[in-house]
Image 1 (tube, helix red, strand yellow):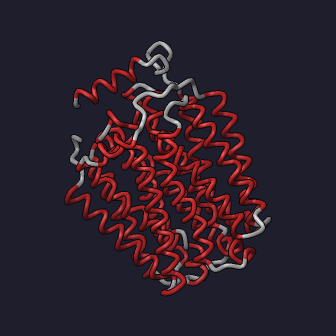
Image 2 (tube, helix red, strand yellow):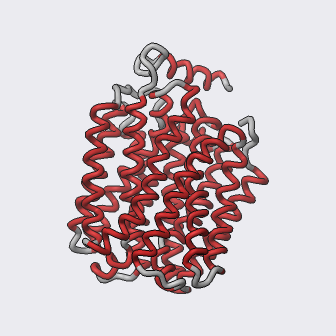
Image 3 (cartoon, helix red, strand yellow):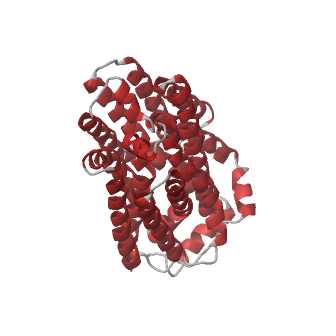
Length: 405
C-alpha cells in the first residue's frame, strides 16, 4: 500500500467517529445502508416489472416506457460526482438522509403521475438519490466498521440489492396485476419512509474526510486498473439492462407466460441474486479475477439459453435464476476491486467513478435495448446482452486484476 493510502487508512482508523475495539462496529448503520440500497434498487428497477400496464396506462410503447429507467440512470451518472462534490463539507449522514428523502419523493411522484413528463420527473429525482447514495456508500462502510470487517459490511449493504431483486420484480409484477402499477410505487414510498427512520436512529456523526474533488476523480481515473474495472462495469451493466429491462415483454412473446408465471420466474432471478451476493463475497476474498469474470460469463450463457430454450417455462426459469445469481455477484466484485483494493486511499472518489459508470451503463443499455426492441424485436436485446457480457469476461481474463491486488 502506498504512503498516501497508509495515511488515509490511519486517518480513518483514528477518526473519533470510526468504530474501534471499545465501541465495536456500527452494524446498525451498516444495516440502514442495506435498507437504503434495497429501497433505491427496488424503485430503480420497478418499471421493468410493471412495464406493460405502465406503458398501456400512459399510452406509450414498451421501449419508450423503458426509458424511464434511462432518465434515472443518466441523472444518476451526473449526480454521483456532482453530489459528492457539492456536499463535500457536510456530515455524510445528512447527505444520506437527504438521498432517502429524495427516494420517498420520487416514488410518491411516480405513484400519482398522470402523464409521461410527471413520471419522468419522478425518475429524475430518483436518479439524484441513486447517484448520491452509491457515490459515498462504500466510503461510509469503511468508517462504520473496522477494516477486517469491511468485506462483511459490504456484503450486508449489497444484500439489500439482492433482496430488492427478489422482491421488486415479482412483487411489483403481482401488485401491478392485482391493484395496479401505481400501488407498487406507493408501497416503495412506504419502504423508503421506514428506511429513513432507521437511518435517523442508527447512522452516527460522520464528518467529511478525504472528500472527492474533480482533481481526485481525474487522478483515480488515470489508474490503469481502475480504467479496466470501469470498462468491465460498463459492458456488464449495459449488457444486463439492455436485456433484462425487457424481460416481461420477452416472456409475453415466447414462451408466452402468464403474469403469475412471470412473477415466479422473476422470483427465481431474485433468489439467485441473494446466493450470488454471498458467492461474490466469498470469491472476492480469494480471487478478484474470478469474481469479476465469472458473473459476466454466466450472464452471457444465460442470455443465449433464453434465446434457444423455446417455449419451456422451466428452462427459462433456470436460465433467469442463473442470470440473477451472476448479477448478484457483480456489485460485490466491482466494489471490492475498485474501492477497497485498487484505490483505498481515494475510496469516495473511486465510489463516485463506479456509481457514475454504472448509471451510464444502465442508460446506454436501456436506450440501446429499447431501440432494439422497438425496431428489431425483443430477441435482439438479449443477443446484445450475450455479446456485451462475453466481451466483459474476456476483458477481465486478459487485463483484469490478479489475486493480490
